[in-house]
Length: 221
Image (cartoon, rainbow, N blue to C red; front, side):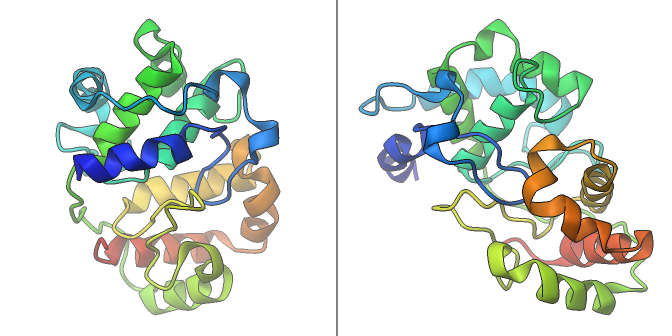
């Protein structure tokens, strides 16, 4: 896994920002602090040390709390982690959360290589199944909605796409998914505006709940 991670570093460190529940920003529009030496290798030991701060909310296993107050990030694609951390920086203001805005602005994440190190460490954590705590009475509807609206980017089993920096959604916390979808509708997720706001605005709150419930019950792949 570590060898594979190191091979992927040059691809992930060229202009990564703007990935949320899907979509990626092009290299031309990338924040300048995401450009770095493409020949560098991530120091996973350093990433592990930085992750101690992340574990306070996401848990030592990276699966997040059972109430979905923070997402499961274990095994998430490095490009996704990197771009989300950048988007939380107040200077870009592409995501809003006081805790994450603070974390993403800390000195220990002040350099691109530090962001890369923690992102790649997180990517090596084993995936796990989170508690599916949605109502469970509209899962079939949620599946239909997902297949009609989301499968083109996130895949048949919501496994995302590493090369395109599209995150996996399967076995993500129900409360986290429904909250972030609702935030997008309310224009509280700037990095989701272009690709998702119009899509989610077509859904009723019950349909958002159903989609989140369906995704939370999918096994991790």
